[in-house]
Image (cartoon, rainbow, N blue to C red):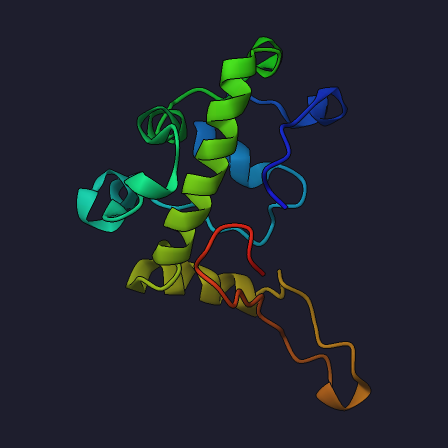
Length: 142
């Protein structure tokens, strides 16, 4: 879902404001994601066990913590695309841990209260807010 490398159709989504996390979170289709605090990512305790699950772990982590958003020339680089895919996967794994932390729960509650995730379509639900649910901690598993 999130592993697609942005292309020219995403041109309006490129911005030099903020870093990779802000840029990635603002891409179309990423509305459900919470922006993970950099302090959380920099704490090695929160990353325990993730290294073997990501091929280019160090480069992906460096990309995530970068102050720069990628530009069009980056997207043409084959190595960048490999690292980008790993950065997306790593960010997803970190995000899954972050949203069950006290700060992450607070961020997700705010999104829930603003109906960012939508409403139940059933009439008897009376437009009850809904939450996205993942049933697995494994990559690419629903």
